[in-house]
Length: 188
Image 1 (cartoon, rainbow, N blue to C red):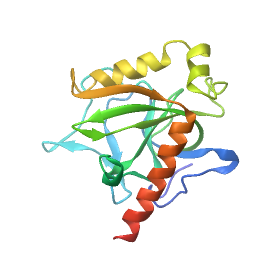
Image 2 (image 1 turned 30 degrees about the vertical axis):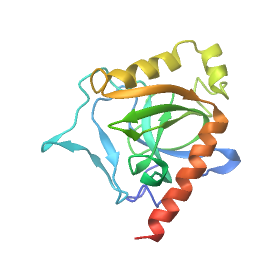
Image 3 (image 1 turned 30 degrees about the horizontal axis):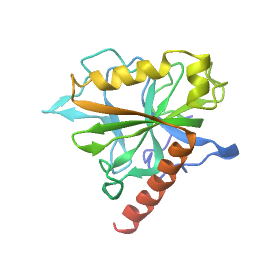
Image 4 (image 1 turned 60 degrees about the vertical axis):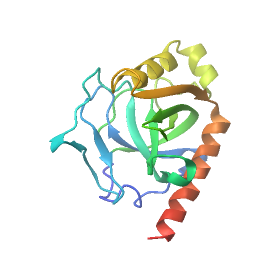
């Protein structure tokens, strides 16, 4: 399903059945850094006037955002949409998929909180994992891969990981990010 141009406001964060919507910006394995900007439009991120490419291994999962959720400065965040890691096979850029949130990876990038929710689509090979503990038990190495990748893809020590949080911590972060988005929208 193709999403409207405004990925931030075109979808609700919550999907049916306790699931959460995720917008895929970067498919599993890709190196092209696309982002949904504050205007809700997804485009290739630019750095020094050139399209940004990750100079490392491709993304280990689908990378995207939660619509209508902001990791705002009021939360110690970077002010960008709340990031979502969707585990499993690659999904096309622009796909909106309902996922089950199972945890969060705690990251700091340039001094800003840059936590990312971790989720699985209900039709994914990883769908039997409903918590990070189950993910580690059923699919050993996945959280280690995520940590290693995020700690290194921008270069050594450019981004710090302080570990993972459980499903409850992820849900609390999501709720705070929904409130942050609402506050930001009200102040426009």
